Length: 217
Picture 1 (cartoon, rainbow, N blue to C red):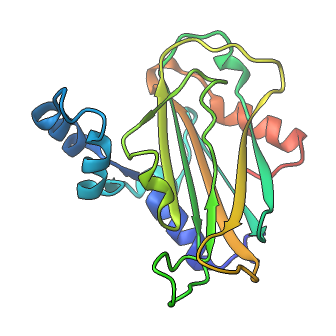
Picture 2: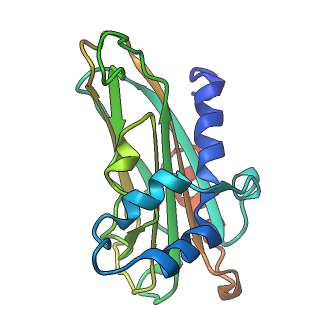
């Protein structure tokens, strides 16, 4: 699978996966957000910061408390595929801060005679219910306007789930600017992490579950 997808797509996904608004996002929110602009504030900041500053260290390796899975494939018009990310059993019913980062990247055929230009629109809906998470940072509409969707979700509330349950990421494809005849290669990167001081080894839990399901992590 890795060799079948262009390296440019993998690099695009991995570089963006380490991006975060960081201190800049927090300061802009503190200084500029008010009741009059709160509904569109994320969109304004997204135009200014994009996905934020890249921290390459976050995607160069995993830790016991941070596990990253990569996947990908090719899709044609009106096709979709579900990628499963096993949930660590140690998080079941535990009230702890959790962060889920997901990045989808692809290279779209273009239509120079259409203002929208992008013939292929790929997207996913980030799973929020299974771990009681909420979207942060980039505007949920803005992330679907290009060929790179980067979503960050966080939450502290306890979540309960069944043994062997997984987060499901359905990647879908539709024609956008005109007819889509080609197959579109894409890369998907998913990272789940918890606080280091909890001493939870979610990496081994996810790896064991993935290997048991004959998935590659």
